[in-house]
Image (cartoon, rainbow, N blue to C red; front, side, top):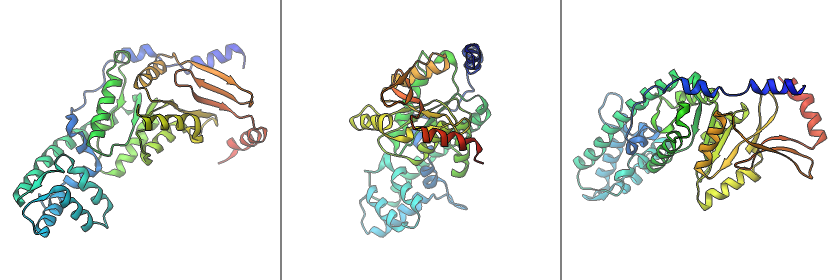
Length: 341
């Protein structure tokens, strides 16, 4: 390509930042209190959805059964949960749901059937309100999926994870640097689906449609968010991996950025190697999103003694494009990549 052809090619890839600012605010979403957002999780749904033909939930039935079987008038909820888990060892989802759904009254001591039933039903009412709003929010997300800008991938294992994720979304997308773009973003703490099968399909669609993916790494692995990040990289999308600003998070950041070979995948359409941008600074996440949508990304081309060409994102020092120095790999790759059906 000539220089003019290269300029024209990349001009066509640029985001129309002014159009983003002209399009106005996004649809209003239903507000769910931060303390209740954990109740939209699949595990809470398993625990608090009334059984068919009954007003009693799985959690209520199993904990009451455990309370009546224990032979004690006073017993901590966490002991009842242990008993319920043992009684449901064949149902892994039920086992996981008991402790997750009782987190806010886990240390309470139960003295009667009615006291236990009251505690569970109070939370179940909040679950019903939160789920109804989360389902409406999902309908809103589907109605704007064609113009979704940012998908947030994460895993949330307890109530505090939901609170933290909600705060992080607010910190990022309400930042004054980003508000002029009127970004359409997916907040995983305010959305639910009728079934976990639908949830997977909805999230795959949103990853496909979003222009950028943010992966909140946390301090443990999670299959779901890893799949979503891998899907976005394979589609050639910018992926930002945010690791916690903790000693363990620092290790994970360095592992993703400097060691793990699959932090760089292949754009399945073009065959070009695509890498994630990895950081443990939330302000870097905000700045990177701004640079993507303002067309102000900054890179350095590195060609060290090993002969590889690397395109390095300047803020995070992450390799986002790569050309191998292996002649055999290069020739084999391009001889066969586009010919494989």
